[in-house]
Image (cartoon, rainbow over all chains, first blue to last red; front, side, top):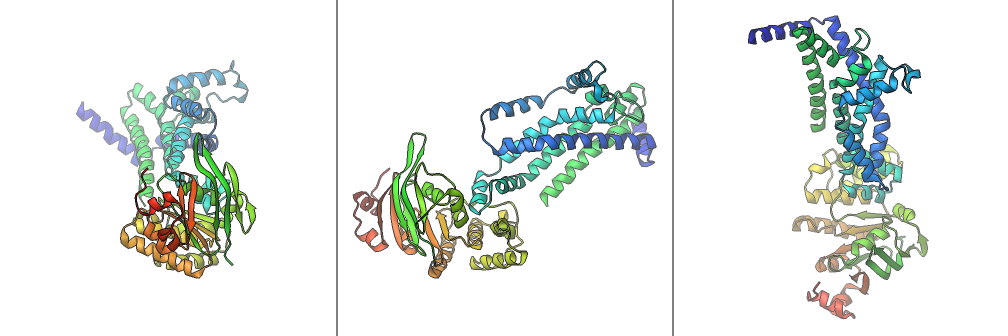
Length: 229
Length: 239
């Protein structure tokens, strides 16, 4: 068993180092789809997070609670809901998003928006409140004060974004149900690992898993390094 | 010409609690007024209202006899906080913050930051991370940041409360130098009666939101007219 695993690892490294076109294509597609999902979630999630973090309004705790509750939503459940929405008989069928990379990106963006909102809002809230008064006493307008507070919370916000990207690229349910794991079209790292493992192509699966974990750890590592700097 | 200020019939209520109770107080231009009083007496609330960071429940702040709104006060008054607030960036950027807000030219910003840092004895610290400085150095950065914007009114809330004696003396030295220039009007809140005597031109005793006594230091300490102030000066006042 150990020998077989070792051999599979050897083959996996060979696939990675030789730049296997299939491995490369799946990796790039994963990065593109999850990168786009992160971009979408930041577009609507970050302004919301900043508003929640800085403003006091009626129902703020309910809004926070709503996004916190969505943090642990099962990806297959969300995948199923989105499948029903995007499918031919669903209300969003006119957009023809089912089995497309854009469909997966949108699905993943729904999945990771609560991470962006909750974590980024917490980062803004955790900023020293006296800095708000400090900015104001030095003449900053309300907008300049808000920008200052966001800047102070920037590393927390970056970590929220990185965490959401990692969640997106590592999820399987949405990519499988919305993307359908179509070769050269919607096949991404996680769906490919599931498929190749089922087919007994362990070396290929391990190669993809190594890449997936390398991406996740490398991004987090670089951010931690920059943060320390 | 330094600007004078006046608190007129100021009242501030937080829920059920009256933090300031119909306060009227003259702040002479180019001089230092020290606010003394027990914890929770209303010193910080008064400073925050003069700084334009809080709205009074009633009453107003006048500068050179003109009634000022909070946003107008924020343009001419700067508060230095008791607990030093520092932006997570370099010393230079901390001091330059208010200047960038005012859209000054880069060369002017560099000149004023350099002057302000020299004034507080931190020349050569510009590129250092502000949060890595000692408490005393951070407080001096806060002073430099306030000097750099050249506000007409400087409000100092317990500026030496968290500092060791050496740093306290350094900060007092900076305030003294500024007082000698007579270009700024300053209000200093302090628990330290000796400090109030050393630095101020006039002392006001605030007690449970009311001004009980406002007099020149000599008169304040030797012959206070208010009985509670007398006890306070003698260290006999209990909470």
